[in-house]
Amino acid sequence: MGISKVFRVTVKAKETVAAILPVQEHWLQLSNLDLLLPPLDVGVFFCYKKQSATANPLLSFAAMVRTLKAALEQVLVTYYPFAGEIVVNSLGESELLCNDRGVDFIEAYADVELAELNLYDPNESVEAKLMPKKKKGVLCVQATELKCGGVVVACTFDHRVADAYSTNMFLVAWAETARSKPLSRLPSFRRSFLAPRRPGSYDPAIGNLYLPMSSIPPPSSALTECVNRIYYITAEDIALLQSSAGKGRTKLEAFTAYLWRLLAKSFDQKEKKCRMGVVIDGRSRLAASTNESMENYFGNVLSIPYGTSDLKVLLECELSDVADDVHAWVSAAATGEHFLGLIDWVESRRPEALVASIYCEVEGSGPACLVSSGRGFPVREVEFGWGKPVFGSYHFPWGSSAAGYVMPMPSPRENGDWVVYVHAMRSVVELIEEEKPVVFQPLTAEYYLAPAEDNTMHGHCY
Image 1 (spheres, rainbow, N blue to C red):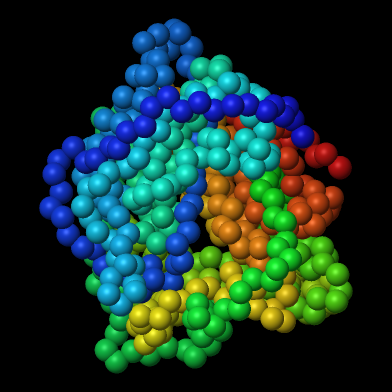
Image 2: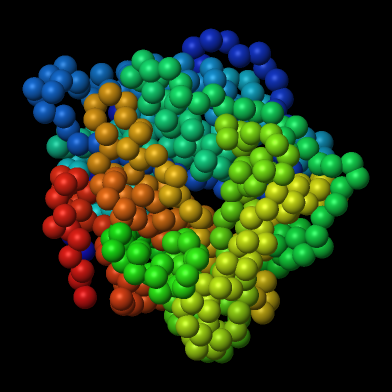
């Protein structure tokens, strides 16, 4: 599983970084799709190797921090929602106050080398050490110097304000600003894109995907232990999986079907049902329906359809049959009309707080897991001026013991491999590591520190 080392992190300084230009205080209404998100914080981090003295002899950690802060001051002028605060209005709904309170910025030192970080187990290496805990505001940042001279830059943001797509835009813009490059993309905060229709119209089946918070029973007293893991899957295994899933099935559909069967296999047969969900981004779907480009829209444009099946059926079916089922309920939600209907449905229930059904432990619903595609994660583009990251990942132990969370992302090796973040029950993780022929290989420093052209890491550990 690679080297594991217990290490300490010492906080050296804390500061709040605000936009370099004054921002007129104003309210930015959260869209109906933002309102579907409960208060959840999401983490993302990037690892950088120490640059050689010949490459840049003056690039000290202090200089890197100055660069990060200066670029953050500038980019917050454009991405001002990240410098604001979430407040609750008189109706009990969340709103975004754009007041330039700023971003809490932490400088730290960890007595560990990059090659010694056990990123396979983020609970040990990332959580509460390299990943900052957001206490106020919308975004916080931690830059950690490692003993070897490497650096980890980590961010925690409020999911109610931004989804991964929006955060990816911000991260690339921050890095471009640090390198004195013009922004390749300017964000749009035009909430009218997601305005409800008059009169509204929606499929009643949407009520199966989301529930009022008030109808959710309290979690059972016997909380299930969940663990976090980071794996990589080779491009060869991904291609094999897609081929096994049948003609016309995408890699993500095949992967989801494979996980659904693993989830079913990991539970006692006393559990009658098993749920699997997928996060769908609606930007391109809405654009096709409304003829409005949403490529640069900043906010949440997500829906979470899911399927339910008997455990016995999942275990007896061929992978291709399960993939057909996944394709059916994903396709039903991957339309502009679905998202327009979802917006209208939320409007009809405001100001009632709502939540995705798959997130909740509902009687008789059985075990569940959610797949969120991070394959657009721009890991190699988050370059601040001291080299491309050798590794990057989202970190989202999302607080639900009722459902697991899995996010495949592109490997920084840029060779078609996937890096996969997993937050799931221990029984599921144990099965993931045992199941063949697809191999979830534990992430090691040998993998992400090896030269990109080195293909020796592609051997299967059967």
